Length: 286
Image (tube, rainbow, N blue to C red; front, side, top):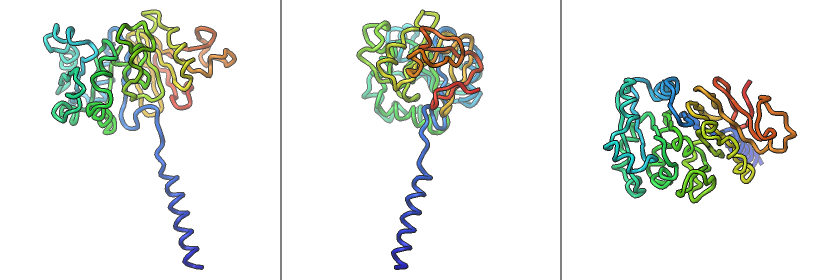
């Protein structure tokens, strides 16, 4: 009898220990950070935050220009303007990494610079090019490994949208097709669809239909010269303009808009510089 009681005690202890050790799930990176920029001119404030998170002057940053396309990259003679800019800001090491071949992206030789990098920056262009080259490859795995060791991934325009789970404007025929032939992002920010150039290109209504169709997704629209900085389940807004939030729970028009500033009968609302948002509970942090 004593042995049975001891056995039950051990089983219960193991069971409750397992519950206690269950890992909390985060919408954003558990250890690293994301800097997601809505396109246009990236303000000095945003670059400064990205470099700070990357390790300051000692940062080791990999710039990925793939979204711009081969013709644009070749026109720049394999040289990245972002590389020059980061070096002017005093970053110790900047490497440009590019391929359009997922087989190459799946090799140890290609990913070598990522293994010691403290940050990655995605240049703008077309987000489907990034998906074609890197989705589900060794490179994709190394992006995640970088975040897991506390690094930062940033990007602007296409380099913003690719960070979500749903690839908004991912059609190869053009950016005006909202749900196209590419719908999977790199998923650094889970259960999200990200749009960019929001007000500058009059796109503030475009995410509504996507969120209506996929109500589990959170829509995040970012205007030019503006960014969100994501860590775990929170983000805060930096830069010059606004970020729009699209949550299906608000689409009935019966919920009071949390900011009092809304569009399309409360289907979305705006956050501005300094405001914070809880991604897990989908509410503004007071």
